Image (tube, rainbow, N blue to C red; front, top):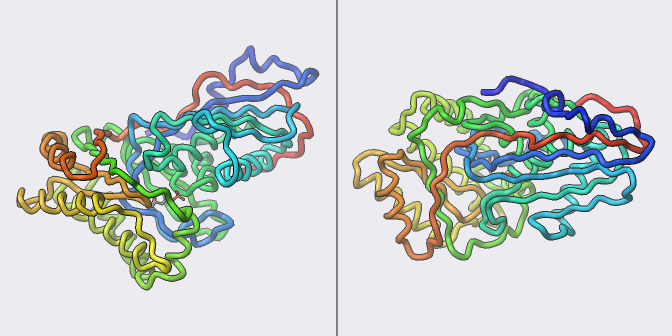
Length: 371
Ligand code: PMV
């Protein structure tokens, strides 16, 4: 677990700080952040304006994958430019980034436009959630480039405004995003509960399916539809705190017999809420459903839980198991019709800055306000 720290303190490089305000120069930083998969899902916002969820959630940070984002605030530019995976972003994806930059500009007291370049080392079209890693990386890069000195906790507080799950991608290992109780949302942030090396035998077999549909409704909208229309939503909310405590405890004890059934129960509950939302939210394909059935069959045949499935608002399935079962589980799942590929992922580290922070100059500075 990392202590609270100011990344700006550690990485602002001397020579770059020497650039004077006389000649306008960009202020830039690069930050890398991983995606995560929730074992206890965030689904529904209590306060949309403050991005505060109804319930706390818990996730595993995924090693191997990352979004790397560079933000350069440039006093000579008039408009933000956003490039994602080498292509200029337009419409919704660009607007989401610009809105997030506005929040950072407001906090830092600057009016400069920015150039944002973001790359994922996993295909965005793969359906692997890129909003968590993308917005965590954007939060890190934009805040550093704007001269904000944020602790990881403050970075988590900021990242949730881009995408709720991004609040968890600041940290590695097993991470809990606490919903908090305060009306102003100040106690709403993620915290690491167990480090990435807590349970070396735990493995996530990510199963990519063919023909995963592109999301018709953004998660932020879809979850509010569930709050408003699913008859199961209130019951879900009542059950989540107990399930989260039990899952956190089972991870602490590395207890698969307790953990795996709970993870599947939570996933089933999330899916039932989605399916009973009006209009119904159906994220799975026939193959995804067959995968869930296959994991249940594997456990039945073994006479004990050897694997647990979960999925987010998408068709790909994450199957947690122990290293000693990986070959059996993977072979069994990889052969199902409609499975495109499988990938072994372990819990990994959290977000971090890449290279030096370039301190240039700014125009139109206003008074900054605290985070
Ligand atoms: O962070 P968002 O707005 O993309 O929503 C995440 C929703 C789930 O992935 C389904 C659950 C979660 O906690 O990650």
